[in-house]
Length: 104
Image 1 (cartoon, rainbow, N blue to C red):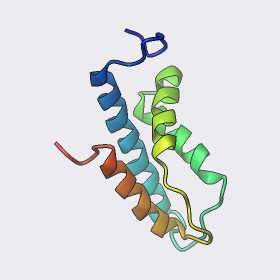
Image 2: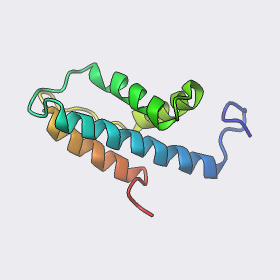
Image 3: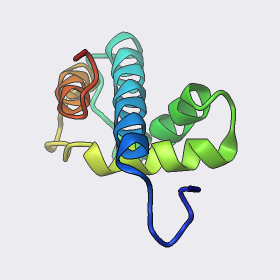
């Protein structure tokens, strides 16, 4: 089954995509934690960071990256006003855990 089929993704594929989305969030969290962690998170940065990280996680496959990025963006927590990049990285790690990242 292809993820573009009307029936949707199989449960196994959905779980895999969720874990890959969690991996994306962890990657973005690492970036935010080391790149100007005391700086305020810009409102437009998440979509770009998630898309770039999803492309890497997907093995540079644009089609697969889009599916993974959509799942990751759906799990991205709302950013409180004035939150630092470092603090938001912690929120992203928590969101990744909720997707099953880090659990066996």
